[in-house]
Amino acid sequence: MKAVMIAAVVAAGLACAGSANAQEALAKSSGCMNCHDVATKKVGPAFKDIAAKFKGKPDAEAMLVKQLSTGDGHPKVTAKEDD
Image (cartoon, rainbow, N blue to C red; front, side, top):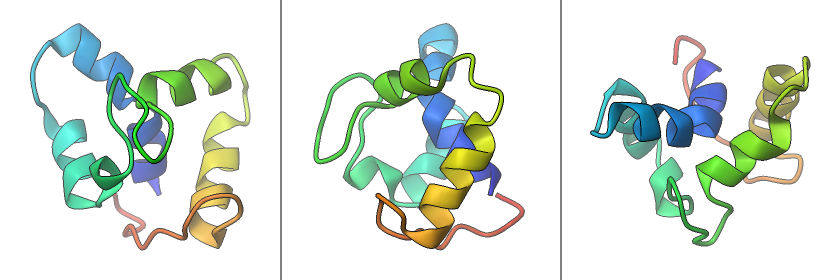
């Protein structure tokens, strides 16, 4: 479920890298980019806003994984455990 955390920090990664990278490719292939964008709100919030919301929270990854894997407040995702 690393895809969940990766999606939350894609904005920061892209801002630093300035170009597409493995995390963006994973977000695209997982369908995250259908509802989310790196910097602007679409159907869902921008990744930069998600990252800001969870910044500094030690349980952020666990919270995001739970929300996305159970469909609690977000449509359930079918990301592979390895992702």
